[in-house]
Structures are given as structure tokens and as C-alpha cells.
Image 1 (cartoon, helix red, strand yellow):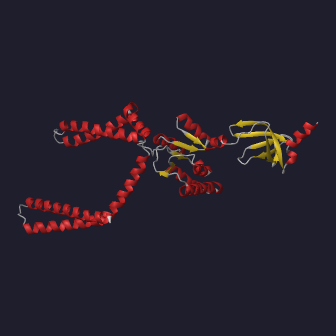
Image 2 (cartoon, rainbow, N blue to C red):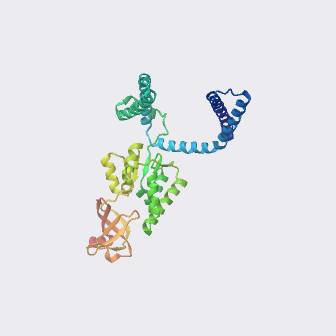
Image 3 (tube, rainbow, N blue to C red):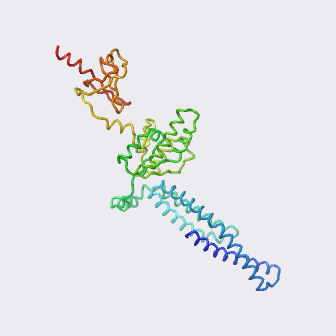
Amino acid sequence: MLQRIFRILSLVVGFAIGYQLVNTSFAAIAAFANVEATGSTSIGASVLGGTVFGLISYMITPWLIRLATVVNGWMESALKAIPTLDIAVSVIGLVLGLLIGALLSLALRHIPLFGTYLSMIVTLLAGYLGMSLMLSRKEEMTFLSGLFTRQIKAGERGNFRSAKILDTSVIIDGRIVDITATGFIEGVIVVPGFVLEELRHIADSSDALKRNRGRRGLDILNKMQKESNITIQVNEQDFEDIPEVDSKLVKLAKVMKGKIVTNDYNLNKVCELQGVPVLNINELANAVKPVVLPGEEMVAQIIKDGKEAGQGVAYLDDGTMIVVEGGRRFIGDTIEVIVTSVLQTAAGRMIFAKPKVIEKVSGMR
């Protein structure tokens, strides 16, 4: 219904434009040829021109509507990545610059030949300079920052949440699905377009392992979109002057004032150096592992021998390694062990223990 109304309005506007254009052109041609045009001929030609223009406008209206929808979607996705404060500062700078340019153009307009063009150039340049200057000094505009801060505190922007930007490694890892399902991550989950493109390249790789990892990442995203209660957005903003995906992630996080979610150790360090907030899935996993103290008892299944003579190795459900002294002879068995010490390393946590049966024998002696 709305499209039909637009098409009718377009038909009327096209007819009016065509009628006026042909009528003006017909009069100009007649004046140039020193011929007096008859009224009926002029009206007939104008009506014909208006009809042609109206039909053309009527036919191309659906295409114009689709084009406007695409442009509107692109503008929305681009503006979402820009902080509200930056938009406000840019608009203020643009308006001030255009006002100054308009005042200057009043004097420049009287210059012969080039006055009109020079005034237009100066006005546009002044608007751009005003916007750039205001953006470069936005940190000094504490009154605007305070205004937005008060709005957030007052609840006027209660739906504002910090964006969580996913990198390739954390998508392929898959644990982000379970974390979002528990509700521990709030806000909007952002998947950059260049990360999606990297996943597609990995999924199309000739290497079977890489191909499976890429397809797993795409499956994880599809699952999150269907099952997660958190809003997931694809951000198409790209930084073509930056070749590396990790550097683009850092730049996007700075632009959006968001946090990067990753389990990449190197990206974690880069974010820390550049002051970008980062949520590391591996650090979260280590933080929520159950605390084990020396002297506690636990059940472990010895699955292989350790590096040292007589050692056996077992694993907890979360992947924590348990090194059991004298446990080699229990390989394949599930036994009770007593924790002797716990070692925390950069790679994770290791638990050292000894079989409880040996402890009992020692106590009897």
C-alpha cells in the first residue's frame, strides 16, 4: 500500500516536472527562433512531456525505494559503530563551519567570473574544517560528555550496553555459546564483517583441518543467532588501510568503545598495550576452575605415564592436568589421590598428587 502511494506521488511529481520543463523549453526555442508559439501547440507539447516524465517516474519508483532501503541500512550500520558523542560533536562543528562559510561567501560572491564557484568551495571547506576541528577537540568539551553521562545515569539511555566484539579464534572455539547462554555477558554481540570474511576464507581452505575449523565457526554463529537471547549484530565497517584482522579489531573496538572477546594470547597483549578492554575466554575458564588445596582428596583416572619415572597423569573434566607420583602402575585404573601441591602457570594449572593407598600404607608403618 505504501509503495503504491509513493508511485502515485511520483507520477504526479514527474508530470509536473515534465510539464514545466517542456513548457519552458518550448518557449525558449520559440523566442530564439523569433517565432510566436501557439497556445494549443505549447500546451499539447507540455502535456505530452509531463505524461512521459510521469510514466518514467512511476516505473522507476520501486527501484528508487529499494535503493533508498539499501542506503538507509548501510547508514544505520555505519552510524551504529560511531559513538553518539562523536555524532553530536560532528554536527555542531559542521553547522558552525557552514555558517562561517556562508558569511565569507557573501563577500566572495561579488568576484567576477569565479565568485559563485569560489563561495561554494569555501562554504563546503569551512563545514569540513569545522567538523574536523570539533572532533579533534571533543575531549575538551566536558559539558557534552557530562550531558551524555547524566543521561546514562538517569536512565534516558537505559538500553545502552557495551558492545562485545568477537574475534575469529573465540568463534571457532565455541565456548562463547555456553557463556552467552548463562547470561554472564551483557550487551550487544558484534561480529565484524572482516571476521566473517576470514571465517569464509578458512572454510574454503584446501587444508582439511582449517576447512573444518572455518565451518565450525560459521555453525557456531548460526547457532548463536538462532538460540541466543542476546542481540547479535554484523558490523560491516572495514578499515581498508589496515591489512591485519587483529589490528582492525583493535581499531573497531576503539571506534565503538567496546570490548574484544578473544582467547588469542597475542591479541590479548596488544589490547592491553593499546588500552582496549578485552575479555579472554581462557582467563575466564581458569578463574572459574574449582579451588584445590593441598591435603584434599579426589578421584582420578590415570590414563598415561608422566615425564618423570613412576609418574602417572590424569585429567579433570575441565582439562586440568593431575600429575600423580607413583601412579604409573595404576594406568587405566580410577583411584583416590591426595593433593600435595598446586602449580599455576601461564598455560593453566597443574595439580600434583600421590595415591591415597600409598598414604595409608605409610601411615600404618
